[in-house]
Length: 444
Image (cartoon, rainbow, N blue to C red; front, side, top):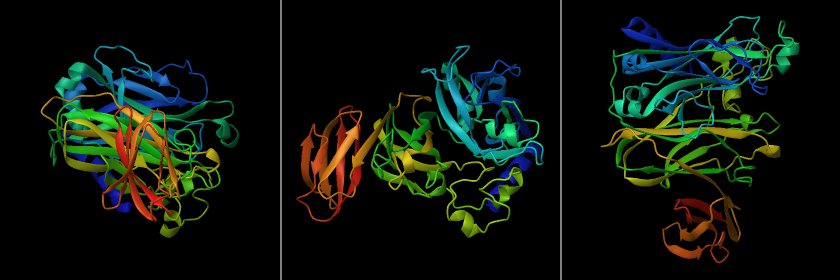
């Protein structure tokens, strides 16, 4: 962790003292109670308030042209009247060209999440009075400079921080009856020094801050599956996928406190496996100026932290990556699953974002994305496996571990494994909208 902090500190310092372009997008914007009706307070010049928790600003052509190939993004959050840990995000938003305004749910708008962070427990009357988060987002260079994309879309940056003031109104001096929760600043630094620009010209927003759980997405404990299909009109090389996820649920046995393995598949091939957390939160203790049950009164060991924490209040969320050398034209399926997730007492959720960049022989394009949540249960099973989906099932094929087809059903939502011996099997499932995917089943 200390190496990571040093790297980001070095990156910012290096950018500032090299031949650097600094682009300030949002400065000290005040955020308000996320549950309250939209406030009518004045909005800083150049910004639009989309909600109490989110501001947006259009990037000018001059700003886009000025970005250099190595880009650092810095978010700075200061506490006002929220003293709890909250989620915040940065989005790059693509709005149809010359559409002068948009709403947060505008169906014509496309977003990719380019950064996520967790606010610390902060008392506005104590120091330090702000917390910085820094990200290497050099991959955005190709998006900022793509003239074909910019002829179709205006590019905006959105800075979001959701907060509520109710605890601070009684716990923090000077916060009685106030509903302002945080202030936020978003700044980019870029340089060509030491940069190795790529020639990506394709971007696919796959999931943008999408909620995943097993009580209103997939219903059954042990089966948390998100499936997304996306279309490539032409082959893509060096396809880089960017994944951001965080589990939440502060109830007893909640997902915040239990580390679980995540699996990501592309076209049924496992491409990413990770367990959130696994770091010490001690470097961020300094920002947690409000007493809280996460940090406690004394430092914890590395083993203490890594035994349970999925993320640290005061830290940025990792942006995970994987690269596929070649993707063919046509439909592809991304599947993200957390098999052991419980969501105890039907509480909690995982927030998941995924986007892809790569190189194609056509200009950068954005296609419609189809998302379906599928419940496959029980697993393990003694006999029947059931498939539950908002899209009807076209067929289910059962294969053994050697790849031999054992049985197949059509227009049925279940398949029977009772005739087969104990072991591992694979289902090949085809939905009526054309979505196809495989899923491992254990016969007990």
